Length: 468
Image (cartoon, rainbow, N blue to C red):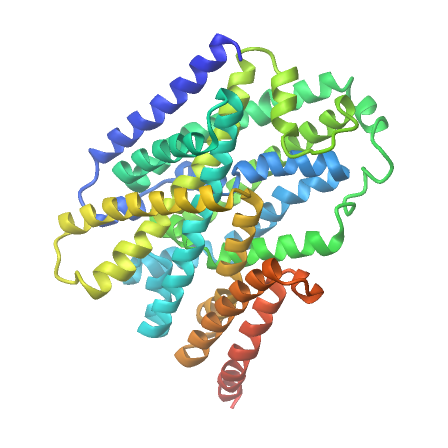
């Protein structure tokens, strides 16, 4: 890298730490720490949505998939865009109203309000496991970038990436996440869209030349395989409705209108990045037509064809995408541990200042656990997809039924969440240690089946009483 690229990267890291310290000065309660005092505006909500779903896997994964399958690679982010629009239309404003009415801070707060303590606890365990895993996946992605840039040992690269995110998030809470996401949104849009799209088109010789150089089938939007596309989209939709960070963003908005509008605008900005990341993969296909492994094609293309300075901006954009997903995941899991477990069972009479300190400590714990999982598993996609499945398969039906059908059968809800959690984890483990072909089926399907079978009898009785 040129000296200016290194200066941009180091400056970015320093700015993240400074913003964390600034946010720390504005915190007076655990509400400030976890939901930003419930006063965030439209741009902040948009930045939080954008930054949490445009992660390293979104940019690097989209480019890699586009290199392998053509324009069908856009589904990697398009699934998030569709989910964002659906969530904005159906749930953002409603969740904001719930949060303000009952003082909710976490997703299990909502589940406990509707069902009972046992269901709340199962939802807490499910959410905490998923978000520690999400944090690990982003640490692994960021560590891989730092290892490539500086030729560090992998564990060192993981530790540096995790350390920076851990410090500014643990110290500054959601306000630090928000402030850094403003900057990260700007870097991602500049590096991948504003500069990235023109550079890709110019490098490939223009739009017509780019399209003309594509192999057969690369202009087919379903070339990735509709089974994979549908499975990915379904997992994304379920995760939006059951992901605790979705509720955090809605609780933090200053009004239902702001919650909806910020979510809609995020969908539009995600679409722009989807195009930019896809074009990187297509342009790389023109320049490197015979790569054996497309996993690092985005980094290779940026290094070879982005000029000095813009190269630094683009690489910061990729790192920003990763770190901006890691911070909200870490804060979400911290809220699970501090509010849904510690405060609920051990600290009901503790002061706001005490709970604020507990929240900071739990953020450090989550960061360390995420680092350990990242070092152990290493595969970013495997980590993220497993966590998405754990979070979505069992929680979706109880959540939607409570929100739209006034359903309060705690026994059915608890059984559904628990059964799905056990099935998904068992299916994943058996797929890894046994040769049986049945376990090659995506665990989202048996997880959903377990949820449906345990949930629907109670729901059917509820609907029957309603008609009666």
